[in-house]
Length: 277
Image (cartoon, helix red, strand yellow):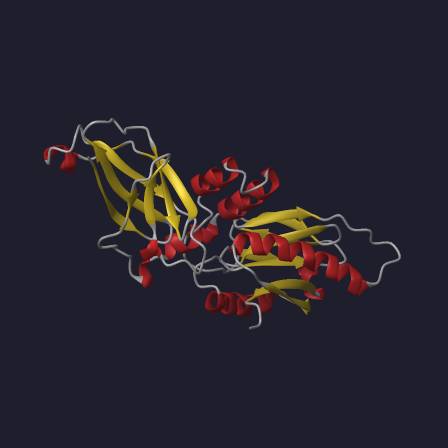
């Protein structure tokens, strides 16, 4: 007989236990699903003193791993399945963390290094996509090289090409269909408003935008500061990143950043928006 329970579910993690009296399951893999879409997986390898004392095997029956839910997924429908088996654990009494306490899950949802590695190993992400998402998640910034032929081309055509690349990268990061608003002539002071708008439109993902200019510009980014929960602000001890010409900058607006004086001339911002219905 196989027994088990899902003890905890959030938008970024699932924990529980599973035990079989006749078959040792330690080391076996369990997978998390939402509507038949696999959203994560991990081994049965956690020791649980409470379960040992309750007579559940040797206590090494627990699991816990990150999950990569789509923004529209309801965590209460998540179930756990033993890989290669028909066993399915449903949530009898799912415990969801309060909305105001999911900040860390929201910042890393689907972008936790372990979740990204899981998706890469399964072929869901290319190596380039994996590295881009990992860099964004770790540092809050990523520079994307562009394949542009700039000679004898209209400015509008260049913008459309960059917008296409920005849209592909941002859609991958947000893990949902989006439209891209192209805002030309923007300045550093405009980014705070974009951050607020993205927080309202996409409450469960970081506010990532794309930045580009025809000439080379620079911004200092406090790498990793997007994890501290303070939300943007000026960079203290930031690392300088260049963007423009043949490079697109993807920036988490929760990270501290300071533009060099040259950026006052303006740049183009690619802002994710929800598709029109």
